[in-house]
Image (cartoon, rainbow, N blue to C red):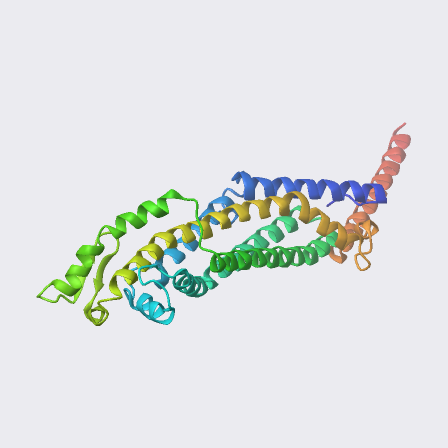
Amino acid sequence: MPKNLSSVAEAMTAFMQIIGLAKESLRKILLRGEFEEYSEDRRMHCTARLVEMLNQYSDALHKCDESDPKNNFLVEEIKVLEEVKGICLPNFLPRNAFLTILQGKVRAISSIPIGFVEQVWTYIEEVVISLLMRHSDNYYQLQLCARQAGPNLMAKMKERSIKWMTEIVDMEKLTDYTCDPEYVAEWNRLMAHQNAFIEGVLGDKERPSTITIEGIGEVEVEGLRRYPLMLPQAFDLKMRMAAYWKVVMRRFVDFMALHLQLSISNLVNKEMEAEIVNELMGPYGGGIERMLEESPAVAVKREKLNKSIKKLRDSKEVVAKIMDSFICYVD
């Protein structure tokens, strides 16, 4: 049986101990990867599960159609270049053509990071609620507060992450920029195959339906022969996007990992305790005094136990009197 709290001071002490133990357990399983408390429960090996989810998220981004440079090779580029034509020199690649394609690609994959945010916070909510229930098992009123505060806090954290990720998506749609020198190096590697590709499309008498480009793969070219003048620009635009898209994908994954670690740290070290305190001390929480109230089940058990103890004491007194009488009779 848990200790019966008889004063506000005892209730406050118990509350602080429970919150302290819960925070330390969460630090272990969510931040440090120490899972001795749940050695048999793989679901609670949180750092490993989070890495798995992050890897699945990365795979989803890299395996989607937008990340396959062979998909509709040069078709979108030619279509966009036709629409952005203007009265200007012909040998300049229009920046708005690049941005138009970039925005379309980012929009197409934007549901993947948002879906990951929802998935990961749903998992963290399960972990946090389960752990809080375990640590507050003997305190019914605290469990009620934790059940209310936990989902509320997770909803706030999820909303905050979705808002942050939406801003990341909007930033990627607005500006094409990177300081990563690998972008230019990758673009140069891909552009080294431009002349051979154009020659294969327009000059090869065998008119192959597909051509293999190193770094891209085998692409269909049958329909591209109708646009001989646009092929150089379209190829350049495609290779710029292929090189830059790797940067975008890397940012989506890296930023998510960093944001996730910071959010979990804030959750454990700041947000959780404040949310539970607000719930407990709020207008509907009843204050710390509510912890003095036991759950009906525990109260019934305690009453039965007290009755049993009283019976044992009474029996002890009766036995003692009988023994005293027996001793007196013998004397």
